[in-house]
Image (cartoon, rainbow, N blue to C red):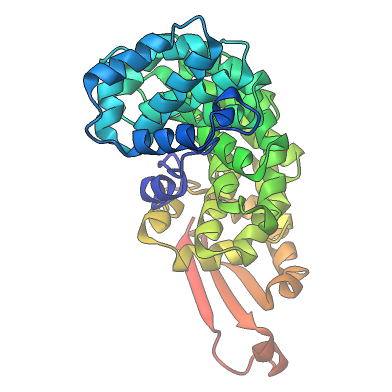
Length: 403
């Protein structure tokens, strides 16, 4: 995540969150619509339009003029053709916006016809894929219309509105304004109740909006933590990674930490550290560190859930960037959350947790002892086979660090 978040963040999130929902709804005219009744000729025309790299500026201006037609059918046809023109061609996205399409397209977002609205929001999304167009789209007042569509649009329109909001949130300082416009509650609702695609689009948009500090509290108030934890705990959702990265951003605020603990997030994160993929383990570890950062009570809770053995092991096998974050200020007394868990005031809890259930969870037994007055803990990790041999061989792993 962008590093208020986990390692490798921008590259990973760029890959995982760039599968925009661009122009998925209605590749061909929708069944039952007037444009569908035009038959194969209309369909062929749309396909030709979508691939016409040399479509003239004059024709584009004509389509834009039709957006203001009193005929809903003419408006539908024009917006659908503009949408297809902008679908795959960066050059067309720029040309269409330069020709003045943005204001009338934004006006169509408030139209009562659901198909026209759906085509309009998809056209706006496709145009927003050109960075130069994002400013004019925002300036034309698109955000409030997109938020309204998020609340009450068709399923496909809601999904594409979420993706368009993602694009606009990438503008400097606009993420906070989008949050103030009321976008976060309907995005959380889409995360909870949307289709598989809708959930991914909602998570994508929330991730972008949570880059603005003030939006973290809004997301917590809207109830974002519970659906994120549910998705993280369900591998079949296909959302474990996305949800974990969004949650990590939420946890950088105190409201998010309290909500995650209240909603039972610590066991979910500990389990992810133990059995998740390497990337999932790393983001879960960093999320646990956020929870531990300022609260002794939360640190004790994390310890009692058996987090220390897998955290220690992971801190030694993670990427360099993750190791740097985990071991920041390691030489400063109480400077690192893991080390704070091991402070003398909490060492009894640590030892108790490690000596009991953790052996069953991890297949390993961990022995902890304080050495000398310098506050150094030594961790010795033994396999069960080693224990059965009465600890006659050398420990598999040892770790010591000043705290």
